[in-house]
Image (tube, rainbow, N blue to C red; front, side, top):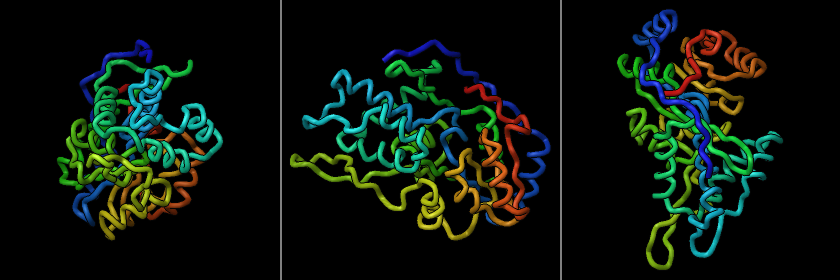
Length: 282
C-alpha cells in the first residue's frame, strides 16, 4: 500500500448556520425527536466501505488476509466497474459478501487505521482512493442534535463492523443505533466464529434502508433525515410531515427528484448550497 501525502485533520468544527439552527429548534417541540443519517459521503467525507475494501485488497496482495487457503473472490477493478455501470446496490452487497473469510478483528483494525490517518488518499492499482474522515460541519450538526435531545441513528450501505465502530468511537453514538450491511456468523470446525457470505435481512441498500428502519427501529417516522445519493431517497422519504431533509449530495438532478418526492410535506435543505459543510475533514 502507498499512502499519499494529504492534510492534517482540523479539530475545530464550524457553527451550525443560524437559519438551520432555527429550523431544528423549531422541530424540537413536535413529533418524535429522532434523526436518521447516512454515513458515507454524508457524515463522512469519503466512503469507509470502499476504503476498507481497498486496504483488504492491498493486504491480500501480500497474502496477509489469506484464511483457510482462500482469497477474496472479488477484484477491486470488478467492484469499480459495477459502481461505474450503475450497479451500486449489487456492488455494496457483493463487497460485504466477499468478506466471508476475513477476521472481524482485521476489519475493525483497518477501520480504525483509516479513521485515525492524517493522510488523504491510499493508492491501489494506480488509483487514488480517498481516506474517509468526519466532516466537521456534520459533527457540529450531530452535536447540536444531541444537545436538543434527538435520538440519532446511522443507516449505511457499508459493512456493519466499520459502521458501528465509527458511530461508537468517532461520533459518540450508540453502536446499537448504527446499522450497516451485516453478515450472518457461523462456526468453523474448531469452533471459531466467522463471517459468512449470507447477509442479514433487511440489507440497508436503497429500499432496504427504509425497510431496516421500520423493522429494527420504529414505525414512528423521524423528524430529520440526511443523505447524499439517489439510493438514500427511500430512507429520506421516511421523514415525518413538517420535518427536515438535509441533503449532502452533489447531484442537482437527484436533488430535484428529492424535492419532488417531498412535495412540500418536509423542508429540503441542501447543505452544500447553504455553505454549511466545508468539505475539509477533521
